[in-house]
Image (cartoon, rainbow, N blue to C red; front, side):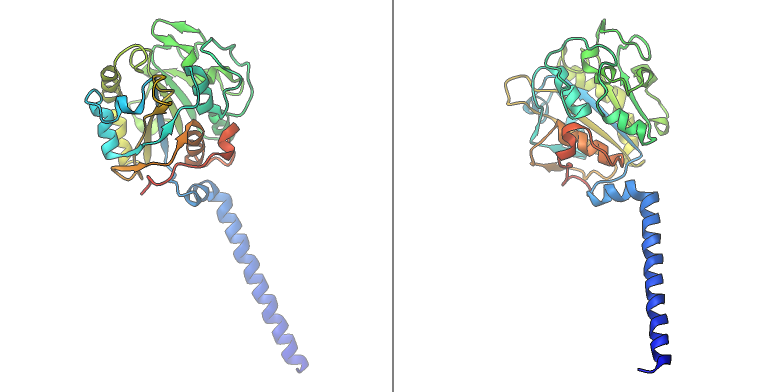
Length: 297
């Protein structure tokens, strides 16, 4: 090979390497700016602008799904997705809320009032806040925004795990009256907790179903065309059905009438909420849980 040819080949190799480096840098830059979206897409999940999670109480799958006492929830099932093998993890209520919110019961084994800010473990809200994303809870019958009372009328702190954590500002706990009518102002992820009657704890399935329809059907329909989601789940069953509970998803990117027979629990729901929000960290047992799949279009 002549010296001239060798120099030309060397220049071509250097050019190819430079091109590859440029492409790699561009790819890295793309990941840096859209990593959250790419992560969700890799997991087969959408990247919604808003997710609202409603937690109801103490009813088994068969008491709600297919029941004439829950026409609105069953309309969400028909137009959305139904997890037919969704399970709570324990009894009573409070530990399940902590599992759903932080991937662990955090040592909670009963329904007693928690000392406010006594825990510092990672949780859905702290992860969102650390990532610069918005979070709030909307709590029916909470006396005032950020109130840390154990109970008041039909309000019970045992259904509000965010108060247990020092890394979640108490003022992110809002009253349900503060749930916005302009849904574009909703946080990235929010929880809605009805009071002890409307969550079906003290009142009927029909009462809770009507409350969801009256208060959240507007958001549910808006979500379908505004890249947003509504999730409805239960803390636990009625203690007679192996802790099998209803869990429904509705809104944009949810395949209407879809269902999944995969066995899921609160940790899978938490993992899915984290990944829907584009988070790259996972709290507690959500780190080893799988995402909910088979319901997205």
